[in-house]
Length: 131
Image (tube, rainbow, N blue to C red):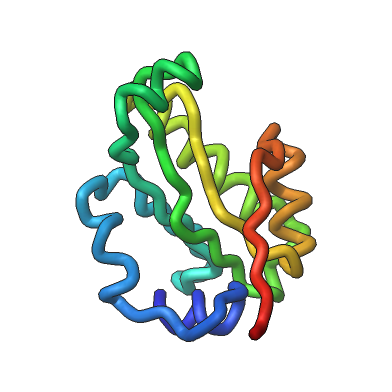
C-alpha cells in the first residue's frame, strides 16, 4: 500500500506506516480496489474528533476525514477513485458522520476533479512561503 501511495499520490515527502496510524481507529475506512488480484487503488479515512463548538458552528454532529486516496495511474479516469470515495462516504454516513473533510495538493488536478464531482467544495487554502 505504501509503495502504491508513494508512487501514485502527491506528498511533500514519502509516507510511512507511522503516517497512517490514525486510520487504525476506524478500520471500516480502509477500502481497496483490486483487479486481477492486484491492488490498483485504495482510500483511507477515519472519524474525526471535532470540538463541540465547531460542530455547532457547522451544524453537524460527527465528521469524517479522508486521509489518503491513491489510484495507480494506469487505472485513473476509469472510475476507480470515484468508486472508492463513494464507498467511503457510504461508510462514513453509516457511522453517523454528516460532514467530511480532506486535504488535496493544489497540483493534484485529477483528484480535485474527482472531489468536485462528488460535491466537495473548497473551504480554505493552505498557503506557504519560503523565507
